[in-house]
Length: 112
Length: 113
Image (cartoon, rainbow over all chains, first blue to last red):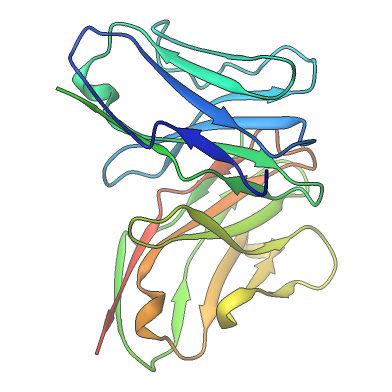
């Protein structure tokens, strides 16, 4: 596609439920990143995928968070047993050939 | 590990006035530096980037930034601000493959009529 797409655009869930957030990067971009943006906060790095290498998971805040990337393309970020502090906008980005990031529109997650 | 500091959380300028947003970074090697803008309800858009060469880089929407290695800074400037520039601005630093790119906390710009 022409850009990075994310789904759903909004997700409201109850505390304790699991959620899955999807990212479709730009075709051919081998690097994919997940960031979290909490209200009034900057961007918090979560995880990074590069080709077939092991992902860099150093930013995941707890073991309730996990992510996978299937076939080097689509990525899914899973949050288990959601907590209210997980409420944020989750941003996916793919890296362009020039080295800059192209961000998706984000998924706004609200945990009640 | 690298880090980025944006000292100003919120800046207010009058329309037509000049603007400078500060960004300081900490990085052990040659940094790749970026400025992104996030308008209300919009995604992040790249304004400009510095990889090497001329330390004064031009971006979209009339923005420019200057890389000063001695000061570890990459400040964003615009000579005359427009009301449509009201947004959140993020500075970022990365390496050549950006597998460890980090963003600052952002500066919110308000433009007064």
